[in-house]
Length: 179
Image (cartoon, rainbow, N blue to C red; front, side, top):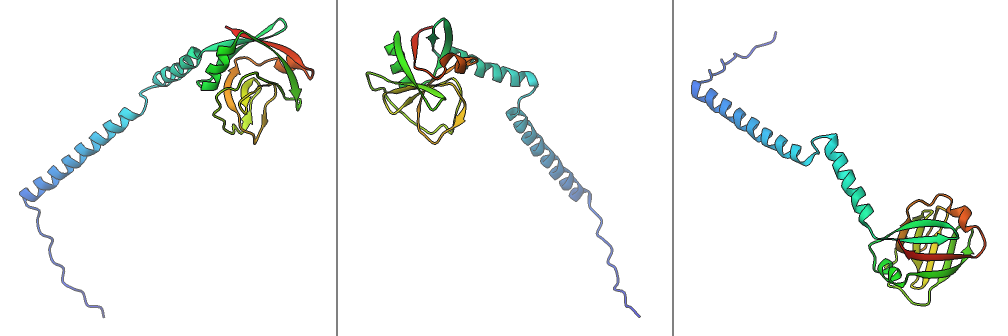
């Protein structure tokens, strides 16, 4: 037969103890509310706030200086990167260059002067990228591909549609001018 142990009655909560428990819960709720308000301040309040942030990025993109690249009658707008190389190249224009084809994906030319370089491996080259290889070789890419090579960004052609057909596989004359 099992023996049962006598149960002790639970002490009654005094009015003072209940008040302390209630007060503690109020403080906990107050701290939780402050945390929630703090988190709410870090999250955009609405989709319009998100759109405003995106339009700010687009505006910054549009404010970047640009130049024009012309091949025959076709003109391409190049948004310049915020690099020393881009500023140095921009100071050379107007400029007409005979560019040779390489690997059926780029046109290149060795410049008469060296430009400042700050090369990095982009991983992927995009059609329309204008880059500096080393300190003197200007490259205009007309195909997108992966690369292990290092380049310094000069800028990007804003709308590279038709660039591959325009540049073709032959050597070509390219004019760079102010936009």
